Image (cartoon, rainbow, N blue to C red; front, side, top):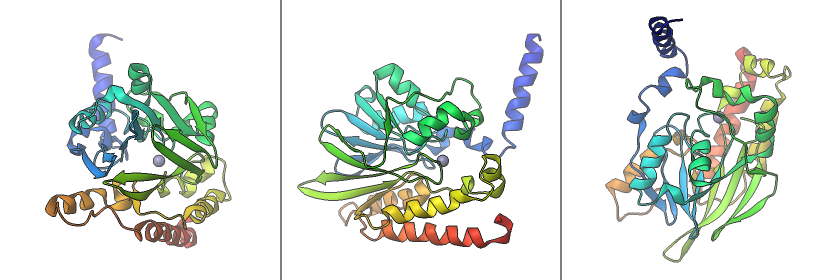
Length: 293
Ligand SMILES: [Zn+2]
């Protein structure tokens, strides 16, 4: 093909992308930029208005929870700088699960800075054996790629990063390798327990999807409920979202801005349990809906 035909094929791909379900999420990602902010103590928000990324200053290197959407690494780098940190100091990235909207910066950080990449073991297996489950093929850029984790997270792992010790549980459902994380954050002598659940979306609970991945009995939905139940009663005073919608990240940020001297709107001991119960109830309703059976 000549240059003109190549260009036309490219223009057609771009036009088609705008009409797909996920395509619009890749166009003009800059409009989702969020000015980074401190949530509490050494825990910062450096994600966009759709996908969360959290930065934790461990006192001996920075840790990220997730590395942003595919194609959005420049936004993440800018957010880290704007928060007052140097992206080169990111020593570890813990990935909530292996979908393309959470792993975007992984290869960049590893190649640029030697950052160590963490992923739940079942999603590491998925990357090797069924990489299409990651949906990386929907990244619209063939330079976006899966990565080889430096460490595969297992059930019950307790890992230390600088001054922070994190407890990990596997919470399969949204993907097989979703992880839940619990750790303490500190501010002015106050310690709060942070909780994170690495994937709530029902997009991977749909009938056609489950049939395609070889689960015609929809066992994945039961597994999702078991995972919610497993960590439901953890003590969590600061619930960190996987997507902003989980904990109304931006609404809470607005309250922080509106009342800077008021109580920290992110500290809420009820929210974790309430949200997990809500997702349980939504899943039970989803499973009873005739269109999902
Ligand atoms: Zn996902």
